[in-house]
Image 1 (tube, rainbow, N blue to C red):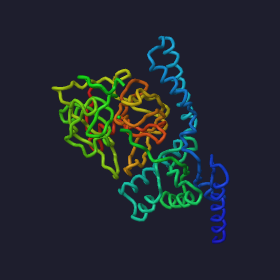
Image 2: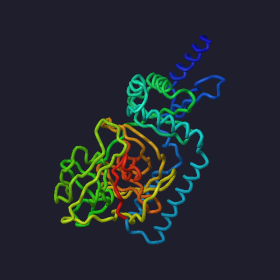
Image 3: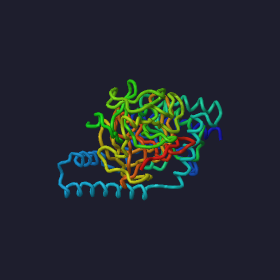
Image 4: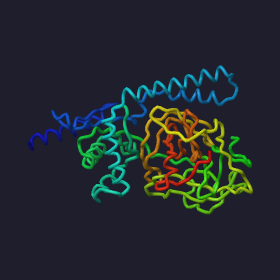
Length: 394
């Protein structure tokens, strides 16, 4: 038995060493020989959502064309039909490729890791072990139906990855399939004619707090006060501070509540600004899109649109409904939706709607390239335990 363990260890190290000399496109390490009940480990050279069959460039071409304003009704209908077909094809791919049993097991392990990282469970040794790994995201790999853990690309090499896998397996065990891939730390996105003053500000427009700029989310009421929801990190440490529109111009309200703290676990990256009704009358419109008609939900493959003060209206598709990640300020952000829309600095707080013109959340983060967006679920923002406990003003 001891000899077998040595052989397995030798084979494992040898397999990892190969990563130095061959591409890592979809390298599979068998965790056992002849024991099929044990999970496989996949080492990939990019996050698995990149392999989901979705022509992101074409989606952005269509989105840009639809927002030019010089198309005929027929041309707009044709482009929208193409988007609808993309959504249909993507949802069909998810339906055909998805393994609910494996996803349930993987999500259980994801929740376990999140609890340990936030300090809610686990031993000190387990917390120390996980915190020593430069984890950037925790989610699900819908390509191979595995728990996916992404690592800082700067630390993603053969010797490090071998150790990270061993340490992760120490915590989650060997009964779940695992994917390890490189992805950078997620970046907060702080904030046309979206940056001019108007007496009826709406979602998607720019505002400022001290030296920070962000995007107005959507009209809501908190404790009887009318205002708007936005990203919490935009308002961190700014309670009772003035909110200006355009940036650092006319004061339109004050920061009333924010749920965010640098370097801590963040269950709701959300905040609330109470508007001054003597200066502005907060609108329930969203800039550049149709007005949402109700609250909605999102599923894998659903089309969504983000209306950011800098990026404008951006269309994408949902690629994960339960991803958690480390922000560049070392905050651990939980339970976000990942989607393929583009965004940039200044878009944080922007409203996100689904293809049925329903409000589904608030944009908060992006990947380093700005090609993947992350948004806070509207249900989390409404929840009085983990969120703000607001009422949307439809």
